[in-house]
Image (cartoon, rainbow, N blue to C red; front, side, top):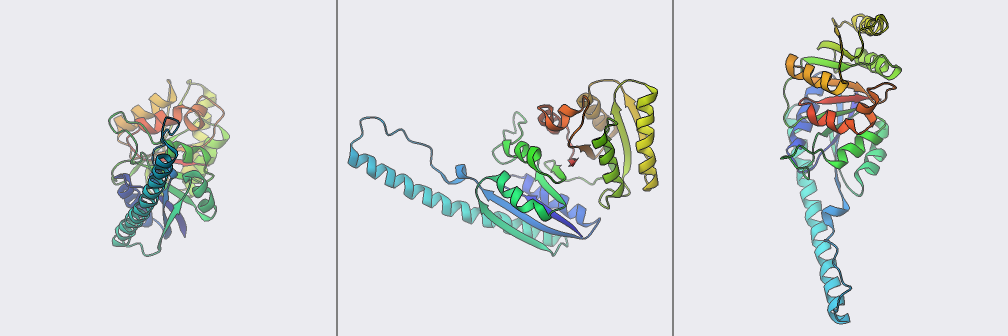
Length: 284
């Protein structure tokens, strides 16, 4: 049974997280924990400069008012969080998933995820949070922090769910890329998908052999993989392949020792996730 940790907030991506979990549940038995974390900025008032010519009595009264305001905001955040979790649970149960638990926590998101991820097989999170700027396509800082720090595979979902039938694997021939291929080959969630391996690199016999070796693993698992060796920058090659050939899901490894390294753990991670209009699953 696959254990899934779904991270939600008040954005539209919360629905997409639930819908992608429901898709996974159609592939394998799952138990689900839905987590909503209330951060300090969600309940704390903006800092007020009290260094000016404010009398002691007025300053004390103002501090008391701010404390009362924080307490009220904390109550509202708790109520809102429970409502968000109830809505997510209802959506998942309507999709036929009965093993759903909800968790509401206060604190830092990354620290909370670390506390919950030990027993999980997969983390599902939205590409952007409710605080992200949709006009400029910025990713939430929480997403980047979770992606960089988690030790488990993570599925980063798009704004709305669409059926998944075509899988693209970003491949560079390194040990982590081969491990990703191995994990794909053994995943009941990805079984049966149309599959393509893409390597951005020089047209050399060595690179062709690396692709062929990976294809052997996928074929043994029942896939009929297409392989492609394309010259160019990895992020551009992968993004254009997804757009031009209509892939629904991108799989990549978390670490690498080639030019792709920047895609997975460097600043290009943000650009890659932002520019791809499909969900991204990152293996460890």
